[in-house]
Length: 171
Ligand SMILES: [Zn+2]
Image 1 (cartoon, helix red, strand yellow):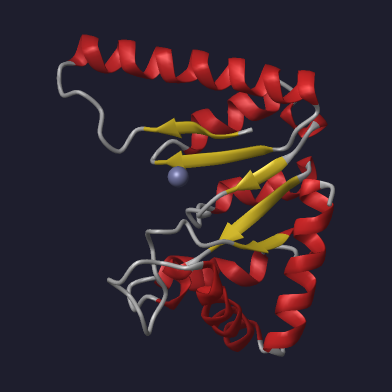
Image 2: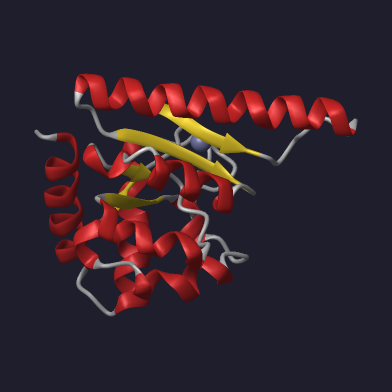
């Protein structure tokens, strides 16, 4: 179910419009969590500059019943506790970028059984193809980089993230 979630990156400047926008985003997010629970589907969650509110909504609405993936995990440490709530952490091309310091520092804190790879295609193409159209086959560069950072063999990263994805999506 998704993508859903909260995005406070580009909110209206006018204060009352901003308030309305945030209220609406929250309402829609809660409805989507309800739908996911009704149909027993995991959530694909997008969180940008909205970690606090997103986490609160997920917990208050018992989203752990279905779990899901924090797609393009924003490296915010306060979200790490969601690993215990049936949530996975999606890592994509950003991990290969030179300016990905925050993500590199937090990567080892994600439980390995909660790590999944993603593309966000056609966006966020990993190095060495950054700037070009992203493709699923490029996830191997993401796996290689994660392996390098965690000192784990690339093949093992591929295997464990595949295993995790199968559990997450019930396939
Ligand atoms: Zn997104």
